[in-house]
Image 1 (cartoon, helix red, strand yellow):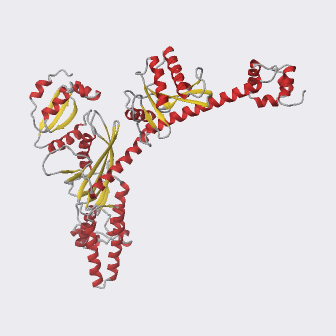
Image 2: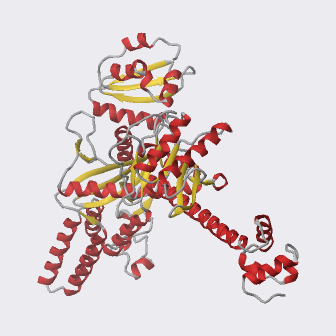
Image 3: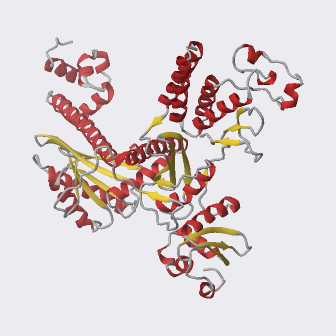
Amino acid sequence: MSSFDYKVELQKIPHKPGVYQYFDKDDVLIYIGKAKDLRNRVGSYFMNNHLLNGKTRVLVRKINRIAFTIVDTEIDAWLLENNLIKKHQPRYNVMLKDDKTYPWIVIKNERFPRIFWTRQYIKDGSKYYGPYASVGMMHIVLDMIRELFPLRTCNLHLSKENIEKGKFKVCLEYQIGNCKGPCEAYQSEEDYDQNVEDIKDILNGKIGVVNNRLKNQLNEAVEQMNYEAAHRFKIKLEKLSKYQSKSTVVNSSISNVDVFSIASEDNYAFVNFLKVVNGVIIQTQTLEMKRRLDETDAELLELAIPEIRGRFNSTSKEIIVPFTMEIEGNDAIKFTVPKLGEKRKLLDLSLKNVAYFKKERLNQYEKLNPEIKTERVLTQMQKDLRLNVLPRHIECFDNSNIQGNYPVSAIVVFKDAKPSKKDYRHFNVKTVEGPNDFATMEEAVFRRYRRLLDENEPLPQLVIIDGGKGQLSAAMKSLRLLGIEKKLTVIGIAKRLEELYYPGDQYPLYLDKKSETLRIIQHLRDEAHRFGITFHRNQRSRKTFVSDLENIPGIGKTTVEKLLKEFKSVKKVKEASEDDLKKVLNTKQILALKDYYGAESP
């Protein structure tokens, strides 16, 4: 707890909406927040300290001074908080992770205005449109404008006096049809300005207005039998229609709204923004945030919305969001959570974009930092399987036998969700006769964990039993005998429906078939099965070979082991020459072996 007396400080803070600021012992601003009720919000940090997560408790311990600003409404607090965070960038506040300078399309404040793109926003009376999150989209817009409307690209000072004095000559742009030559008065200022007005309508998303204007001009040209002009207007309409088809068009009744959605994973959050004007999505961007404390998705979105709207110069009165925003104020901004209709489709489109962005970005992070994926997978397993700790050490048991013959058990070990093959073990079953899978599982589990206890080795956090309730009960019987049934979590997995069983639970747990947790459990089960089957086949083959060779008169168990060690298999023993066999057998044994396999005596 910080040295200052927070109870005294709280008495100075009113029950009004506003923004609070925390300073440390060096009087450095470390956190900015907003509140509907300043005293209640600030007090919650100190009164409910035991409910805070670790990062927030560290923040509280560093607080040495509190400052606050009262505002009229929570909307005002929301906007002021954003401005202060952008200005001061406190250590514990979430910041949007994006250092790009986005380009704008500018219509210069001058006679015969030039139109071009720039990354510098200069307050000189010019009109700026954007910023554009996609440079490619910005160039598509500019190229379309230049195809529709011939404009000057030079930076000459086209004052009325200069043009009348004939100071300028038309350039190549005029000769190839990209400019109508206002520098020599070949194009009137009124005609040029009409083109600029059309361009402004296009940049504002009012494509329908420009369409109608061009159609009227086309009809007038036809009526006057000016077919060359009519043809030019027709080409413009076709180009404008082609451009419009590239835009995502929604219901034209949705005139001017912003759409926001959020998706988060552990410490990362991603916010998608769509700007809709006159039924057309004219801007879209997804930005990344990183949790500093224990902010909820709603709190993160509340921080992101004013920041993104400020960056993209949005003044929309309606904001579509995925959940209710607890921000009350005047009618300046309306938050909408749509359930049906076109607005719901817009929200779904935003959610789809942010989900895709999140997936791609996390995949990039995990490729660069594999430990991030490990932590995420283990955290998800802990959540899905209702564990108290991360399952960093998992073991899985499986049994193999053929009608009770050659019974064996296998155990595979995963550490940090990956196979640890050096820790794999197998067991020749000693106490079970006949096909008794339950008793085999009971013996294997008992022997495994008795040895770990004897050798003072760490127990796994999770044990998986390949089988249903019977095998699970047998495993639990052994764990109870060892007194460790409460020191680890045990689940059984039944093959048919991939059901997960917990000891004592009547009903199984079903995981999503596409979940990573189930995939890892299946990987463990399949790996245990593979390892167990391989060991079982080796044992069966070895015992078959041994019993076959031991049937030969004069050759005992010790001699059989020497033969297999030397020749590796019974087949090679059969094919071996007399000289090679002499390395292990005497003459009498060689004769017996040849006679047994039907060969001629040497």
